[in-house]
Image (cartoon, rainbow, N blue to C red; front, side):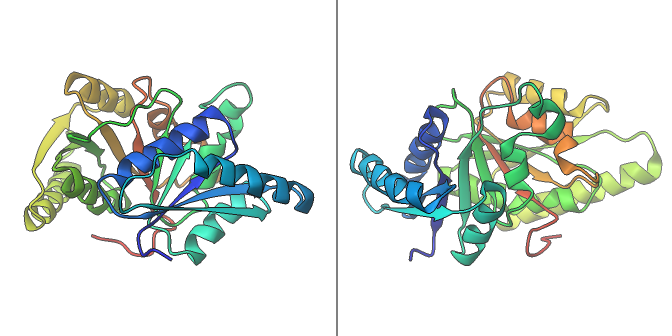
Length: 267
């Protein structure tokens, strides 16, 4: 198996097909194996789905240096993607989301429920997310150490694409909190300098941080958002900041990691 494995959960809907196309787009820059994964609810259906996946695979335009495999397992979406990604040492899960509607606004989307069960990073795309070169990545951080876990992953994307990382943080009026955020910014700046990542640091006013992130992304023509998800809530899917960025109106892809399950802290 490839050491650089990307998993694409696939349910034969247009949004998961879009996620697969996005994975293939990434494969043009990174030689990788892409596993198309379907979670079936019965053994009988698994045989049928396995044949359908092979049909899907046969229609793909696969970049040179990229391999595509298919896998069908009988199980549960919210448990088995995490298990399979860990057992396979996947580097990335690329998943489509249908967004939030109806009761999903209360209980969280499938995307959020899967994200909180998986250790490796995600790229989440929407129906209208178009594959395009990543020239600018916005990375919002906060006062927590956990928020910095996304920094290295965003740097990886920047190095692959030759992109610029725009780090955002909220201004702090309290002296102690201001010192803390300045220390966070210094650590991020030093990390990117070590890795030769082109980066800028930007402070925004406090309040409605998610909206300010999106306004910045739109006005600066950002191509990707990168965040660490680290809600302390009993029900993490209620974290509106991460949720609203994932379903952003610009349909930007979102690189996200659940910092609670990540294997190691970078800072």
